[in-house]
Image (cartoon, rainbow, N blue to C red):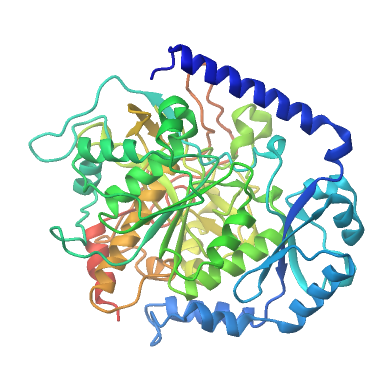
Length: 570
């Protein structure tokens, strides 16, 4: 069947008719105002300072307790607050709200009730229910850490758009050369293996590979057929998705609506190409799903994958404090369990997505959750993929044939964490020379932590080839690298990596592990595709310099050497 067949045209007509009917129904006032709403209630937890202290202790290579992670149930027992849970249940019961599902240790309640019922309970109006973060009523303010909408309405679904890769068509599949990696102009898996010294942990088939990895997607489908074609084309192991969470693997969608699959196919194809044979989950979500929905789902999954790749983000300034706090708590708990969360730094430099349209919107605008101190944030570089001997520099749309600029900067919400204070201090010592202008929070968490090539990634999408740019590309690469470290350590009966940043910054300046990126800057937004211009901020941005910087982090990774030093840790 092709898009030109009568059947397909009929199908499209039917879908259009249903869409129009759905829009009309949504606009109908009698049901819209009192429709059922699903909210996530984050119940207060105990001992969170203890969780943070334990996390930093077991993540520090200098600690005698390095790698001594806690179990899911032990953390649940440590943080469970029975009084807060009882008080929240009583408050819900007083309003007749009983359609609730609780997480295993009671940290979250997902409840459904009519809009009018929620309005009475929360003391707000219908408009308040459309917010991603909802004000906590006084009656339970001390018992709840936050109230979040589990599903975002269609018209409010633009918040998590920064992770989408810049896509361009390609005319033909690139081929490998005699050295076993792609020739110039392509960042193929074999090129990444060659340039970054990536040795796999899997050994020859059928050697078992321990650990697990996952990609988070929202509003995106992925194709098993495209994955198999990618693996065949580039000679990566023929593996299938181990678990499709929520059922967003769909060959037909990717064949006929491939724009719905570009991000997910990219993430899935490259995390499996780097984390070879590591069992991989595809954590798909409806496009109306919020970050609160995802983090609570992962936090409530006892056998959650050991590495999570997240190529999405939103403005830190537009993310409510309750969501930031709840997300931070849960990634801390994940790290204490030995689970890593890897996040893209964004594709619009320091000004973020808003600057794509106007220089007048320039400024230092950090991205979240990239700026969270308990995730490993990944930026993008470019250069070597375009020819032997080319310098690796910060990826920027100011360069010819490049569509994105690596995000980076300093958080306005989080202070500089202890593990990166020395690295950040080195950069700030010459801040007047290293930045294009003032206005950033010199006491904030700096990001990215590391950067890898994020330019010219060939991806199979709908049976055809796209070539993409993005921190969306470099992020699953780093996630796959951590999965390789886990596989190596687990094979020796050692712990998984968990929260990686304290170890990475412990090796800051080690030229055997990091290739220091000292050229380029991140003052431009994404752009340059047909019909767009590139907006560059004249007074906002950072230069890549010797040592850590908020354009390239610690630099790119010599993976073979990283595997060796992590393998030596207890």
